[in-house]
Length: 179
Image (cartoon, rainbow, N blue to C red):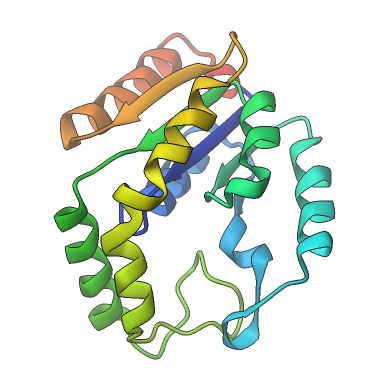
C-alpha cells in the first residue's frame, strides 16, 4: 500500500486517522486543507490548487486527507486504499464544536498557516448538511474507484478498528511500507 486517500465529513476523524497511518506506515502525509487555503481562510486559486493536486497525486507514495470533490476522482483512481468516513451528523457536529472550543484562535496541525480555529455559523451549517448534500456525491466517486483499490467505509468506531487491525497484521508480517 503506497497511496491512501481519506475522505469524509468535517469532524469525522480524517486528519487524526491520516496522522496515525503516516506514523504507522512511514508514508508522506498531505492535508488538502493546508494546500487549498491561504492565511485567514482565503481560498487558493482553483487552477493553482488543481496543478498542485495533479503533481501530488503523481507521486509514488502518499496519504492524502481531504475531500475537494472536483479533484477526488483523480486521487481515488490512483489510490491503493480508499477510506470513506460516513459517520452520523451528530457525531461530526459534536467533534467540530469540541474542536472549535479546544483550539479557538489557534491553527491546527492539519490547517494552513494563518488559518486559526474560529466559530463560523456557515461552517456549522455545512457540517450539518454534509451527509445530505455532499455524501451522495462522495459515494458515487467511491463507486468509480479502480478495481485494485481496497475500500474501507467507516460508519462506526468498530469500522475504524478494522483499519488499524489491517495495518497491525501487515506490520506483524514485517511489511510496513506495503500495507
